[in-house]
Amino acid sequence: MTFVNLTDSDFSRLPPAPNALFALARQQFLASPAGDRRKSPRFFIAAEAVVRPLTPEGTPAGDAFRGVVADLSTGGMRLMHTEEVATPLLAVQFGLWEESVSLVLRVIRCRRRESHVEYSGAFLTPLRLRGHETQSDESTAACAPSSV
Image 1 (cartoon, rainbow, N blue to C red):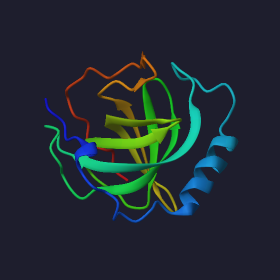
Image 2 (cartoon, rainbow, N blue to C red):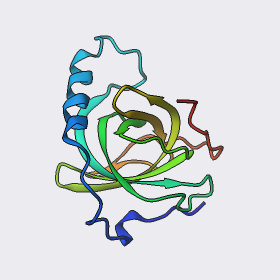
Image 3 (cartoon, rainbow, N blue to C red):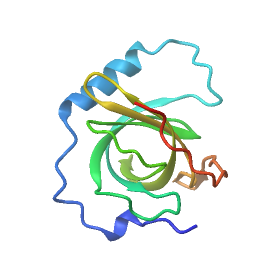
């Protein structure tokens, strides 16, 4: 399966992610309960990301947009956006420390909140940072977002 490469495109004209999403990501993270029962811990980052919806085959399935990576773990992440995008895969590019990160996220859960939509997912491609590689979801079966 070949995925779209976000670094080959110019997204400079996309509107920025709303400031309210950054504040909301921080507020939610601070309010999250201690003792989270996940395989790996989550880390708050609130980074702006360029996101491109993808088909199960990895080809573009709509217009790119800017969202907020709310938190990140070794196996996945949570994204926030103002609109619902009903695709099983998302190509995501964001800055982390001094690196540009590009990966594909398999959407596991899509939740409509009062002011935004949250996408939770597992990495379909590994996250590589400073010589370290994270876990990836090897499943090629695409998962459509749950109803919002």
